Image 1 (cartoon, rainbow, N blue to C red):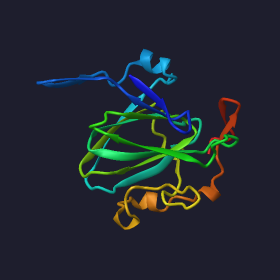
Image 2 (cartoon, rainbow, N blue to C red):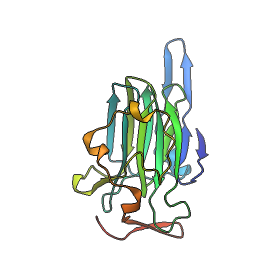
Image 3 (cartoon, helix red, strand yellow):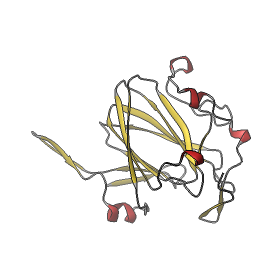
Length: 196
């Protein structure tokens, strides 16, 4: 498995080995021991599968506050997305900055998004499907987000704003300037300042 830290090193791009032959392929897409050796020592408790019918569908930027904060391991099984993680850990040297990568069924890469990050993605092809693992169950009362097109975040989404397909909920998410983050970083440790 290839492991590549991104510009914010806590966010990692992972590419499992894939064995192709005339029948198709085989790939071990998750192995707890290998991922722990790569610095991803999570106990995943829920798998989510999402299909987006149209290119330009944008979901995010989402996160859950402690004590239900979620780390995510995201992969694409059909089509392609531009996947983004925004650092919302107060005290982090990269607070308010983001990283992004193209994940596709072709490149077979995965993105690990730790707790303390808002996450979102935009589909680059129609009929795109993603599967992602999370290490905490969905908790609607702790669900929060940031507005995808906030100029303070300056995310260069690969789709024109007029082409973006959004849910009503995502269209109404707050701006980064209004964020009172429940995540705080002291050294290499992340703590919670509230349960939001």
